[in-house]
Every structure is written in C-alpha cells, then in structure tokens.
Image (tube, rainbow, N blue to C red; front, side, top):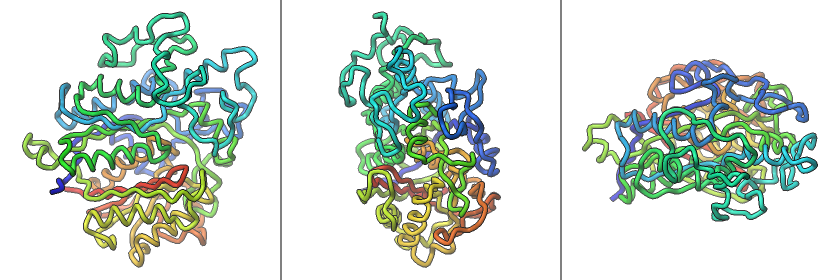
Amino acid sequence: MSRDVTITGFGIRTAFGTGADALRRGVFAGTPAFRPTTRFDTGPYRTPMAAAAPDGPDAVESWALRHALARCGEQALDMAGLGPGAEAATLLGVAGDHTSVTRYWRSRPGEGTSGCRGVAPNGVAGEGAGRHEDAAPNGVAGEGAGRHEDAAPNGSPHEAVEPRAGVLPRGGPDAEPDAPGARFADAVPARLAELLAGHLGLTGPRLTFTNACVASAAAIIHACRLISSGRTDVAVCAGGYLVEEETFGKFDSGRALSRDGMVRPFSAGRSGLLLGDGVAAVVLESAEHARRRGARPLASVPGWGAATDAHHIAQPHPEGAGLAQAARQALRLAGDPDGAALGYVNAHGTGTRYNDGAETRGLRAALGKRADSIPVSSTKSTTGHLLEAAGIVEFVITMLALTDGVLPPTAGFTRPDPECDLDYVPNRPRRADAHRALTINAAFGGANTALVLERP
C-alpha cells in the first residue's frame, strides 16, 4: 500500500536572499534579479548579466556551495522540527562546485582559458558540450574517480577546516585556503551529498543526481518513491547551483544567453536565458510519520512523473513529447488524469526559442481542453536558470503559490507569440485560490520531470 508524501520543512536561497519572504519580494512581485555580475571577469563574454547575489558578507557568492547546501538543510530541518541523528535519506541534485577547478586552470601560465570565450579546461566548448565536470584535474573522469583530491597542492589535508571526515562544522562559512586546488574534491557531486548528510547528522542512505536541469527534481521524485513504498519515512532533498565562469562560458559559446539582459519566457521578444544562484532543501515525510510526531504539513505531493524522449542532446522534442508524458504520469498518479483539479503550472520556461514553443505544445498535449484555462508562468524570468537547482527551487515556489494564494508572474513579457498561446500570467502577480499545482522541468538529453503539489 502506497503512503502519502508531505512537505514539512524547507530552506531556500536565491539572488533575492534567504527564505520565503525574499521570494515574495522578488519572484512573486515579478522583479527580475538580473544585474552585471562581478563574480568573475565577464569581459570576454557577450553579456555580463546573471541573477547572482551581490557582493557582501551575506551574499551567496561568499559561500562555497557546500556551505550553502548545509545552511538550507539546517533551515529545512529546523522548520520540520527534526534534529541531528534523524533516520533520513539524503538526496542531492548537483553538478559539483567547479570554482576552484576554474581558478586552478587560470593560474597555470599558458594553460588557462583566459580570453578563450566559453572554452572549458578540457577544450570542450559550447552549450551542447555537456557536463564534463566530474573529471578531476588529472583527467580521471567519473564520480568514483577517487579521493586524491582531498589533498591541497602543498600536501596539507583538504579537510583541515572540518572536525572529522565528512562532517562540516555548524554555523557560518569557515575560512578555507585560497590556494589553487584547495576545494577540488567539491567538484565531485557525490562528495557534496556525503558532506551534507554528515553535517546534518542524517543516518539514512545518500544519493546524488547529476542529470542537468532536472537533477534536483529527480531527487524529489526518487524520495517520493522511497517514502511512498515504505522504504523510508523521511528524506531531505537538496539542490544547488551558484553562478560560476565555466558554465557561464559554455552557455555563452552556445549563444544561449539573452542578448538584452532580460529573460522573456513565452514572449515574442525572447532572446535566451540567463543563469542564476539557487540553493534549496526540503524535508519530505510520510503523512503518517509526520502525524505521529505532530509535524505540520506545508503541502503534499500526490503525483510525480519522469520521462525521456531522447530527441536531441540539447534541443527539446518539438512537440514536447517527453514533457507531456511526464506530466500525464504525475496527474494519473495524483488521481486527476485530466488535470481537472489543477489551478496553476510552474513551467520550465527558459526563454529560449525552442523550449517555450515545445513546452506549450507539450502542455496542450497533457492537459487537452483544460490547457486554455490553467494559468502557466515561468519564474526563471526573475530567478534566472538555476540549472541543477531549478527543480527544487521551483518546487518551493510552487508550494508558496498554493499556500499564499498568489501566482508568480512571467516577468519581462512583451507581446504574445503565436507559438505560445496559453495564459502566462504576464508581468503582474495574480490572486488565485488554487488547490493543486504542477511544476515541470526539462534537461539536456531529453529528460523531463513533473511534480504535483497540493495544499493541506
């Protein structure tokens, strides 16, 4: 017998700041967070714009990704009323932290990428080049490539700032060596999951998902399966991406970044995406477990789906076939195959020419006649594209839309595009008494995910 899945806590950080109120001031107000980033030299690139946190002691950019994940995890557990030692699975969607890898290559005379637009250290360029980031500096690829990265170039232990292996000290970002290679190990995604679980004191299984822009949504889906099947009572799901030069360069060389410094999903004036900071964590529990310990459910997750159309390495299926299949799976599992109970869809909505038209057709295929009456918006118009973190950040945004009774708008919308003919909540938030919502994501290689949320 399957068990109901509830959300009992979350922590979130974007370029707008920390927590739900920061999202309300930014995402739900329709205020884009795009500005010229000073995180790295943007001179070689076509645009300096990103939704990156500003400079300052409280900015996301002052964190290593591991600390951002840990802080959001702490916030989620605190909200859920769970503490260290909880028997909970840890599921993470992330590609790793490659800041120090990029810094290392730039520090080597004649071997860096300075002035080579969009070229990664291994010479692979372009948006379609994929995620080579699991390669260690010696060229050994893969998550299981070993732990030789734990030593800094001078032979000092990489984990000198941590009291014991795999455990981060709680409370504030710790000073770490700035030497090239000091955090190479953080480029291994599975290591970040181990650090997160160790820091939070979680004793369940650990899983890492690296499937690009659906990574954190895939983590949530797998956690829902574990809970629903009775294999675990509690799961902490997290995802993170902080704007850094390697990926920025790849998207720039693929000509995917917006030319006018704005992201305009579903609009005739759209010219591309922009990247953004996003880190979030959610606590999922079986409804029975939450009741036993007196936890207040924020929302439930009655349905989920995943599908791969394998149409193209970087372009979506022109009819949104995989996306429609994932959405149908989620709606059927939620007991609502026609979407009759849906009041909102948080779209993937990258603001690129190919995605938005294909996504519109996919939603029409999944929702049929109901498609015309369901509001759809893209919050990437304010947060930017958060890559591996997109799924979990938009999951939290969708939950807030239900609990607050406000639909976040598609910002930057100029004029309708004949290819995109749904209700996109243009530019202004909208009050709505929605009971259920759908959030969908897509990724390179034709991967698609869908999650149905329901307010209590």
